[in-house]
Image (tube, rainbow, N blue to C red; front, side):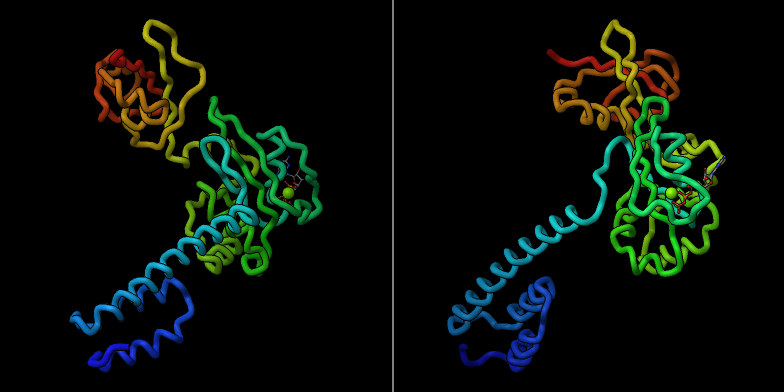
Length: 276
Ligand SMILES: Nc1nc2c(ncn2[C@@H]2O[C@H](COP(=O)(O)OP(=O)(O)OP(=O)(O)O)[C@@H](O)[C@H]2O)c(=O)[nH]1
Ligand SMILES: [Mg+2]
């Protein structure tokens, strides 16, 4: 170590040894480097610290990647369809009933509480839009601490539907710092429509020039424009875009010519015109 380093630096060097996390080490090391006045005598030392810093950064990258792999393995259910929705509630609130009714499932469902032991997954079709429903096993006092994996699934979905009494569920959500969009419902409501209305999505139908619109809608986030749709279909639709024609709620008259920044609405039909 070179002479003439400021006393703060030696103090920092001691503290550095106590730091555990890689991220924290990186931050601290950056500060340490900034404490060293640059001159011929300190050059080599700074270079060494910078090398240490770059090794730590590589280590952090490896650690983050590892974390991702672990979380992919043990937590989460692969998203399928336009959105992933969790059904959450106390026992016997009708979660399995909903999956059986709307997703053609045959999950055991009776008056017996806590009948569903592991998450159950189903696919709902709402006017051609596929929405994934997940039944989370029933909540109880202390659920959040005992079922980290379930809380991770909830944290990862697009919308939570709480069936029945919300207060006990809310308490568990608070413990696990869940801040997801939540709606409340009961199993005898028209659940599919309610879910769709809470998802902030729109359906649009593309149509080839001179032909009828496609039957299958494309689902986009509310507020999406023609550019977002084009990107969703294929990069050529962006690169070769000339103009588009739109029928539906977003235009003043049917067949209106629009550009990339035109904001679409639910139910719109759109015809792309591309350069050859
Ligand atoms: N007819 C009718 N029966 C319902 C309705 N909701 C729930 N049930 C019945 O109530 C009982 C409990 O419903 P489940 O769907 O099994 O409850 P759960 O929320 O999955 O609860 P767990 O057993 O903890 O998984 C079953 O016998 C259901 O058939 C409903 O809206 N209409
Ligand atoms: Mg159930």
